Length: 343
Ligand code: KG4
Ligand code: ZN
Image 1: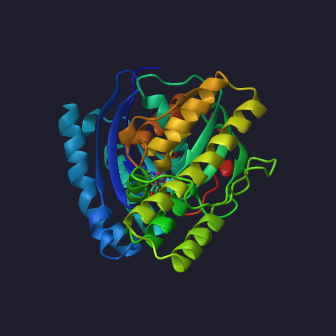
Image 2: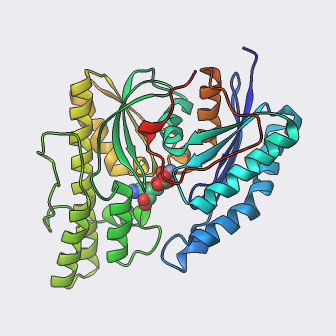
């Protein structure tokens, strides 16, 4: 098959991402605009504002990516866009932008599952893993362990029964007045504290399955904050204990999943995969059992267009047949298990 250049459009939540991926040369350019500053005043993502901002950002980001790549629209062979899961209005902005581009150019538009984008993002790194592997997907909306045997071949091994790991970070950060988005701020505070001074549970650590539950941790933190007046070092110690509790469970279940599937490779994807303590403990634990851990490049851990372009390209290479009729649909709720196999 000749080289193909796929444009990726991401607009599922509070980041607008555009990227251009070449199936022979790799990533040619990518640009992200984060809406964090805009939503900060409201303490969380305001869906209507998110949609409006995606509209403002997409065309300038596309121009930048094309300029950085030294190419123009005529050089693009297909457009991949995030069709779900995510905020309905925000998804529709990216989907209509992608469909309009594809229609104008007479090229196919390909809907991409946001989590599949995250899942495959470590394959974009300088040292990519081979299939098969176990993937730990830890984002703001999902915590899942998957057995991955190829593009489009994902078996769910376990998942969070309530809050996702990122959601737990964000909600706990709010309880500690760390604002939005809380995850990175909480992680930063945790690095200055010591775990163990306050005791938090390790939910479902010994449940015997590969599921998770993180909502109780937030409640435990809330109880502690209400009953103990915390000074600055106390807050840092509590943040450290929270991070330790989440990390410990994620590490234990990931290694159990690797063992259960008889794998030597573990892939970590999604925003929480940027957490330094998680990476450190995973690497240490994996090394003792001869397992290698693969991560996406740090800038591709959180939402971006590169993973969408790459995922679209992999699906096209695997024989996916995109609809070239100009119609499009988004799926705000879209379980990864409902992804149709490629080809
Ligand atoms: O994958 P992502 O960008 O968006 C979703 O698809 O959800 O993940 C965002 C999540 C947020 O909950 C954010 O707080 C969390 O990832 N996050 C972190 C860190 N960086 C981002 N959580 C813990 N430590 C971090 N360093
Ligand atoms: Zn994401």
